[in-house]
Image 1: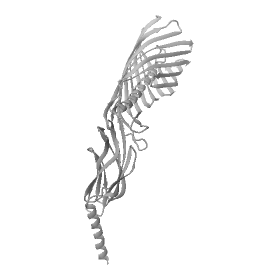
Image 2 (image 1 turned 30 degrees about the vertical axis):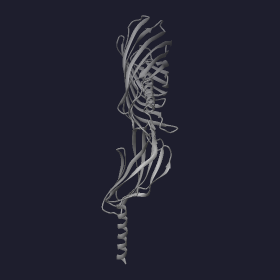
Image 3 (image 1 turned 30 degrees about the horizontal axis):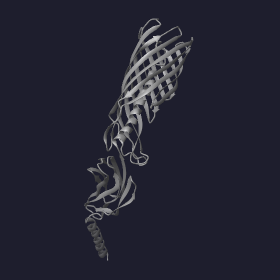
Image 4 (image 1 turned 90 degrees about the vertical axis):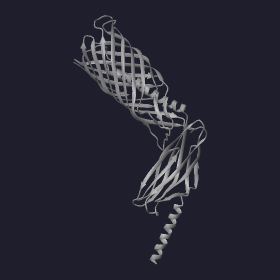
Length: 452
């Protein structure tokens, strides 16, 4: 009896192996379809026994319209029944693009793997066409690999739509450069009297977060060095920047007591920043895609400033000055997120790109001695900044160069200082900058200085 049962089992397994070896069942159905998504199932399970391979064609009904770039995201669902030493490779190939997954035995599990397929610029209605393949290796024909289904998600766009969205990032980068100038000005004593004793200052602000130190050192009559470093954290419309900012400057003020005296200043600014940007683009749906990403960049600038100091009396001093600054934001690494909850099929990568900035502004700083131990400085400046535009590698399209960006902005501030003791001063200040299409950067803070 035992011998008969054993022979029967061998006969059944041999029959299964023979049926599977004849080739997989490629019968398919589309369970659900919208204009941008489709689920394709293999009705009887596309099974391939260990020791062989099989391929079935996959064709979708959702299409990329003529004149658009398309990307299909394919989520493949497979199942493995593998013994120790067995393995199976599952792959989906379309237009020379392949996504795959390798499974080693022992295994009796379901698996899902994802790949993105770019169609390029469609010259006519273009559907997804590909080959689903199982390549199994081993010795035991009673085990198998199975391709269950493919979930397809489609997005399509134009290069112009992508360029418009990259322009949003370029404007956010310009906003960061423009607003950071206001904080850098604090680090080189822009809210303090133009001349003063050697000093060390600690300052902090909220609104746009700042915490740092600054200093002034007088080299000779009329010549001084100024600089400092600070932690910064602030937002712009659609983006954010946080990190460390440093600034340094050499300043000359014409010595003497004349009512009008010349001044000149040259300096550098540098910041290492964690960055986040966001954009919106059309993707063929009614709502489009909101894409966000994060990364790291370095902002570096050099500037020159010149003007006239007018001191009409012993209590007042007004500086009229103009500044020209040239800078660049270099992106080290930056990639956008893509998730099931928020698909971003045309994900952009800004890594190893840069945008150049030119800033010109004119302004006035008025310092008044209110009492023997109380003074204030009020500042106002207006200017324009331009950027060369952002650049990104967009999946499915390639390099997309944004347009040049520009903004008109105003910077403003007010500081009140109180000499609390000999060589010690406490300050309270407000400072900010506002520009067209770049929002507002505002700070309320305090500082404490020691003279030496």
